[in-house]
Image 1 (cartoon, rainbow, N blue to C red):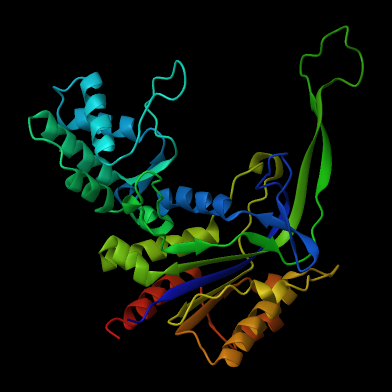
Image 2 (cartoon, helix red, strand yellow; image 1 turned 90 degrees about the vertical axis):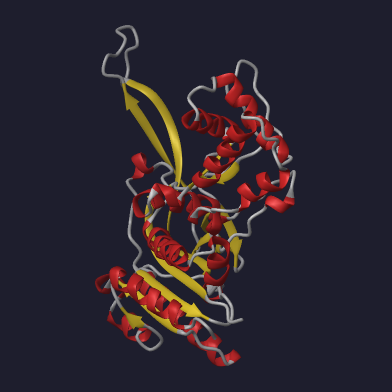
Length: 374
């Protein structure tokens, strides 16, 4: 069976910012190619993508990742049968999760929530189906473990199929992720800096004479041109969803949200929201390919790095296919000409077709579906 991969490569310049912090509040970094780079974790960008899905997909196509899944099922039980009181609904819900070997408990003292030991990802349709099974059990029919487990695996939401699910107590309930997202790295050396700030008190205390600062502090930041990469296994996505049209909706939403979303850390402080300067999307039938090797040798320039980054990315893509005798089924790019420059765009046109975002989303649908039945 021929597999289909959609690789998304993004070059994006971000001004002074702290969009993804470590446990000390510092912008995350990584050593790559022997130098320190700015880094944004894959988890941070996947969270941004999932949040952006709320504007690109219907809520029925989305799931919930939560520790209070039992409470969510209990609420749905009462929606289905209003005669069931809250305590009974919760007991029924906990019985459903117990049938799937998932423990639920009130973890914290004085907490009213019934929690699982970790975040559990469920499609909204799965929540509804589990509630239906609980109501049937309430009416005298015993829960069947096989049916409960089936409810956890069927009717998957698009985001659940894309990002997957791990259930520690029962690996049978795991869902393999159809997408992979790399950690974003700066294409050049990056240095974290500190901003000393003051916050003024609008109503200063009379005896506290001085400059009038109510708060003094520092915030750490960096700036970078990032290389971002993600890939979608369309074969796995369609298998997981069991629906070609749903898989195509998922691809469209993922590409758009991955390209256009951004983690929101310290956004109010830095107003750092930008759009990518260059996007390359390749549809491949062989394997997914991360092109980060283009930047192992860090770019060093005081004239801007984006044009050279585009040239390197394009050259690495072309050289790799030539060396290994491969080629993408199709390739497209989006570029902001005044930012990346005419020379970089001319190089990109040697391996891909230039288009706009709306055009890219339509082209991808045509290319992905063209390989069916091979």
